[in-house]
Image 1 (cartoon, rainbow, N blue to C red):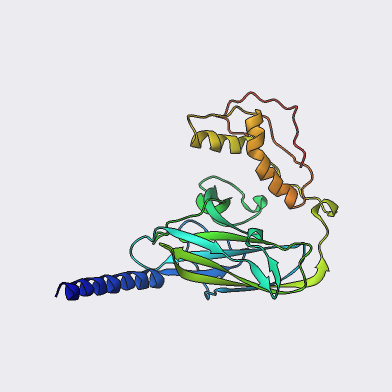
Image 2: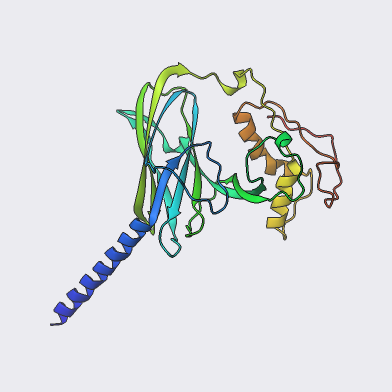
Length: 276
């Protein structure tokens, strides 16, 4: 009799677990989206959802895509994790380390992506939160109000063999796979030159104090001085990203003036440089 009640309890526990698992699976929704899609805080995915990304790349190329995850349930989903596989074509492999996931964070911005000249005045202009900053820290909670936006980067090695490589990005809740996104990348017999050989001029202006300001606000007990070695090490990874995109020099705003926050009183030292 004891064995009967024990088996019954185990069976009920298993049924309950499967019901919870089914709920997670039903509530977690997702789709690939265009790299050109611009999201505001709370903005829902629209369009036809797809779990398949097919693309064509040169050797030495870099591809971008977005993944959007949303929650169709009534409560938040926690303990979300992500697993990226290798890209495989026969015996050839592009390692998973060549696939990076970065997670969108919000910054103040305009409701519409217009050029500066298209905004005749800033008076009474609404400010919205746009998914603009990218963080390597995975987002592990999915609320019912705001989707998770994931920026996917795939680096194709210059030595990659020609062919179609396939792989997956899995999204898990409590360690159980709930969504599988499929990648199919066709590598053609063309090679992109090394970044150092690119001839176009990329010029994205930099404001190195803003990174420091964000860091100091986030670490009030371990402040870093402006233009110190720690400050330069802090911005180096960000400028490395620029170098990887082809920028060979920086136009860096370093002094107080029209574009500098008037409440930031800094001791500026202009004699420094960073080689990209």
